[in-house]
Amino acid sequence: MAKNRQSRDKEATQKKILQAFGRLVARDGLHRVGINAVAREAGVDKVLVYRYFGGVPQLLSALASQHPLWPSFEEVIGTNALGAADLSAEEIAFRFLTGLVRELRRRPLSLAVLRAELVEKNPLTIELSRAREKWAEDMLEYLESAGVPADSIAPVAAILSAGLLHLLLNPSLSDAFGGVDLKSDDGWKKMEEVVRRIVRALIRDIS
Image 1 (cartoon, rainbow, N blue to C red):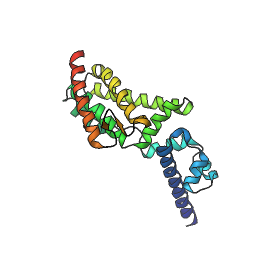
Image 2: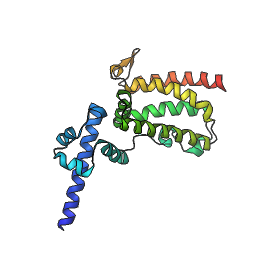
Image 3: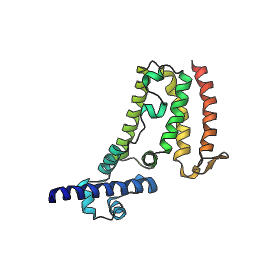
Image 4: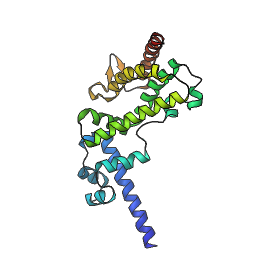
């Protein structure tokens, strides 16, 4: 009985620590979060943070296992590989770009991780960068397996996603850009309309 209670207490503490870590990363940025801050936010002794997780990289790994940093193919595209095979290259590129933005807007932790890559280069951000690139490669392989010409989509997606991510990640542009409200769904809908026109023109140009 005592062991079961200890196990429940341990799980509850771990959950509290991970939730505190997630809040801090989303609010302050990954590069500003340390073990002391996590312990204060969680209301526990920092010894417990080290005991259960070891450090910030392990905290991030544990949190990502519960809340995936990067969305799945189905979440981004809106269908599986079989369904994607029936879509045009233009539609796939459009869905990839707008779906990626939509899913990242729902993932403040993912945005914090991407910002960390921009702020500094260290073993953790290098590993995060590799994971992100692996995710992108998997997405393209998924498209290829569905019979979609990923080689024609990749350049378009890379160029446009860079601009869209800049709008998402730059704190100074977090409210508005070019008269478009970046805090509202309506503002991003306007962005999607522009993306649709650009994708249509670029795909036709390189096809």
